[in-house]
Length: 471
Ligand code: HEM
Image 1: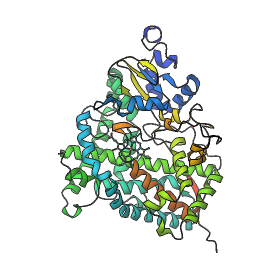
Image 2: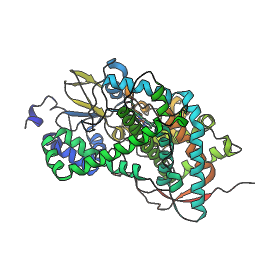
Image 3: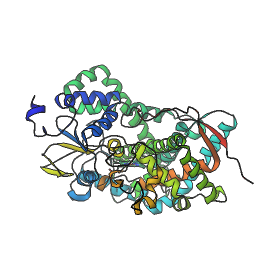
Image 4: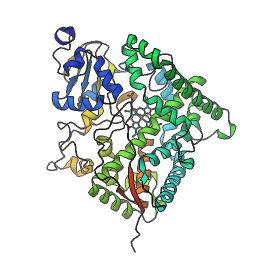
């Protein structure tokens, strides 16, 4: 009764059952259906939705700036964390002072100079991807692109974060560390639940707590072993990887912090990029005219495959880049809402918000809202081409492009954005250069997939053939 009729947020619209009984929201999260519900609620209630007693979800460009932007000076609105309290802090979940220390220690590893040095390492794995897909398609088998993209990004990030590949592309399996990580990610909603309902958590802990703790510890111990091996290996010194950046920085990180940051870099940098590549390929296959146009562009921009570099792929393929931008809208790797707690009474996107409220922008709901994007549920890369932003008569001129921030904003935005783009452009361009792709299951529908902290993608089976060379 209090939540619905007396609470300071009582005038904000939202699902009454979630507002009265916030546990229902967490149950949807554990079921993997929370983000799907939020999409529906934002379509129904509009750009602000009260998603439980104390939390508001926004779906506007202004809310990105107000919540995540630089406007709060040195002090960020605290994140609502979903990590176990006893875990070592890392760049994503840490207080402002530690965050600044971690971010500075990693900045060199993500600089333009480092990216140029990383290109050779990344190319080596893209070569392996192309060779692996070629071998599989010559055996006339259907190819699971989800798996191949994951194997590639895992090897790349493992090499950059841990100083060694995870040998995924060689073995064509994910390996123990990654399998453990996948299992661990699925318990994230339970950790969220635990943080909000310590009593419910006590019961869950009795039932499955030991297993969860074992998984978490297992994953951390494994990561720490690899990190210590890299740290103490003199032959690896001088590589342009993340570990070198942390070790050479003026900031001093303990071994536990080196391990927790490497671990989070691995998670943040592998699954996200693979998800986007899988999603964009899915949407291009579902919308064949976009695939045809991108393929034509890639094959006419270069005379030979070696010409596809980080630099050339970023300047000579405007349509393929528009496909990636549209992929980031339709299939954002981060689907959900990353909440922050408001430290005082504030205004967000024009709405008054009382102290203590949790606020955030829901990625997927914002990107698929018809009030932000014209024909929001259609994959239309053309909306990101320059003519759509300059020609008033273009049907996408009024799209609210700033409402889409897949890498977030402000001091805690994605440090790996440039790396991700370089990798994704390189991988997609070379796939389109080499292969003709066709969806095996024509009516495959990924618009209502489950999501936990990440998307549950499932296999993307494609009929892949070596490209036909024109005379
Ligand atoms: C398409 C690919 C990617 C997407 C969509 C993405 C998205 C994001 C988002 C939304 C955040 C903000 C998280 C928050 O507010 O809690 C973030 C942070 C971060 N991302 Fe990415 N990311 C991608 C690729 C990468 C890559 C390749 C790396 C490199 C290893 C990376 C490393 C990080 C790190 C370290 C942070 C934390 C930054 C900080 O708090 O200062 N990401 N990313």
